Length: 84
Image (cartoon, rainbow, N blue to C red; front, side, top):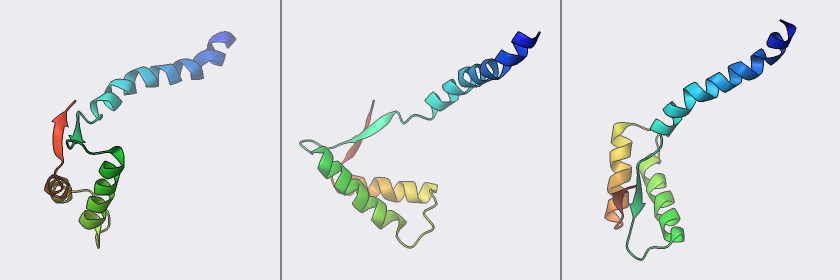
């Protein structure tokens, strides 16, 4: 009986991982931004510029409206969403 108690935290940890992993995978983004001929540096620059523009003067809260504004900003710079 003592052996089971000693391994109980490990078993509970493994059980948590098994139960939480599918949920974490479901949160993974299934698309990415793409722009013909653009470098990763340009992507990072445009992304930071759009974030600064979108979230300036706000609390930084992500809402449906801020997501729409962020997408609109990226699209105005020539980026498009592509499914993975």
